Image 1 (cartoon, rainbow, N blue to C red):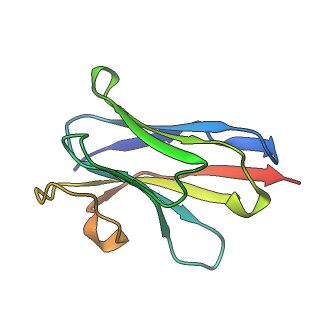
Image 2: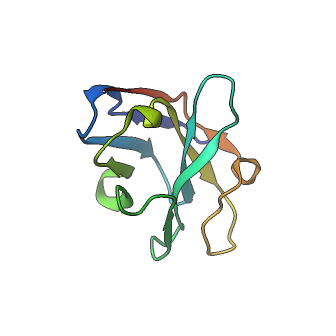
Length: 120
């Protein structure tokens, strides 16, 4: 089991920024997913286990990074919109394919999620 603990969610106004953090011990392929009520989880950003490869759904506003010294993966979210509201999940994969995994089924471990609410 790989424990993942998200933090950094909250209630913000449209246009604000948030940085979500995922505490993880070890080096895995990591991903962030977003889920609104009644919808499937959607890929937001991912980073390879090496940290060399990242993929972000909306790179104009979001960025993913790894802080190996602090055993954390961060999701920086800028210019937030009301439609960004939802629960954000951190996920880890033991895959050694060297790339970014965008499908939820590619991840074995999930955090409990952190709520982000963006008010207009």
